Image 1: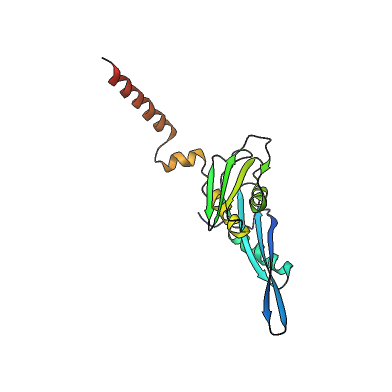
Image 2: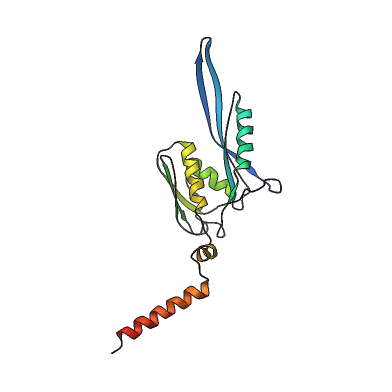
Length: 181
């Protein structure tokens, strides 16, 4: 998948997680922060980024810059996804299922933040395995990256809808001919 340029997009960002890290030195503790941020346009484009700095606002700014560099797109079906996907990364695993209109976002933690920003309004998702926010976020992106529209799935299978329907009819005719006396 090619890189998406963030210039023409109106991106929203959301902080998923902020971690405070202490480094013990001779004079005491030195604190620094890492931030995990997701950016998206609400229409099927999303990216995550991680930033580290001595202050929280600077860490968030760096994370947003990295997230804009890692944008990816995926197909949406009205307000949900086309099919069930399972995303994996590290010890985390996320299962995402399409839901009927009006269901809302049934997900928690980093998965919910990513789904809200990318524009999905009806989905049921479950985070399994490890609960590290960084791995869960990457697992969610892995799952979204696996999404295919029906047209794309047919194209990847090297056929067109007319051809696959014709093949199905030929198989039925052949099976009917075999059972006749």
